[in-house]
Length: 200
Image 1 (cartoon, rainbow, N blue to C red):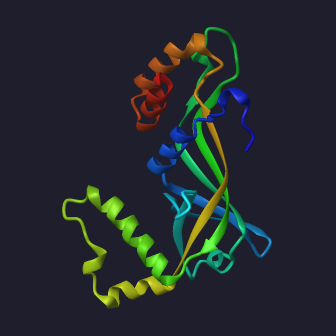
Image 2 (image 1 turned 180 degrees about the horizontal axis):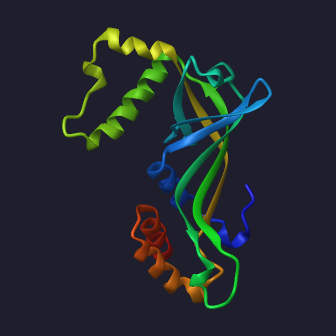
Image 3 (image 1 turned 60 degrees about the vertical axis):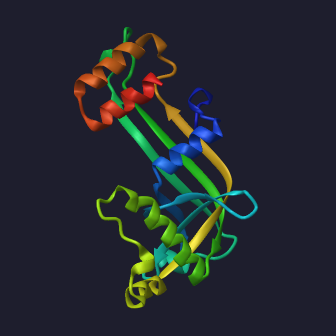
C-alpha cells in the first residue's frame, strides 16, 4: 500500500488493537487468475509459537474457499473511520482530501482441520456474544446444528507484514482545530469518529 511517511503508523501494538476493534475485513487473493475478495471477520490471535495470526473461515460454496491452499500468500484489509475533508476549512487555498485509517496485512495461509475450525468458531462466538442480552453457547447446540461446520473451510494467516495508514491531516496542523470543529458540527457517526481520532 502506498503510504507517505507522515501518515505511516509504525506503532505495532496500536495497529493490532485497531485490527481487533475493526476485525470485519476483506480477504483478498486470486481465484482462477482473477482478483477475489470476501468480507469476513478476521480475528487477530497468537499461535503456539507466539506469532501473530489471523483466523477465519469461508463457506465451501464460496469459490475462494477452493483456492485456499497451504502457503498461499493473501492480503487482508481492515478499514476504520474515514471522511471527506473540505478545503474550505483550511486557512489557505488547497485541494480537498479524505481522512482515513486503513491497515493491510500480508501473510501465508494454513488450512485448518475441522476440529481447529470448530474451536475457532467457539472463540469467535464467545467474543461477540458478550454484547447479547442472552448470549448463546455453541457447546449447548445440537450436533445436528453444529454439522454446519462441515460446509466451511477454516484457515489461519501467518502474518508476514503489516502496513498501516493513519491519514488524519497530520500535514495541516495549522488547520486541525477548524477541521475537528467542522467534522463535529456535521454530527454524523463518521465525522465524529474522524474528529475523535484527530484529537488523539
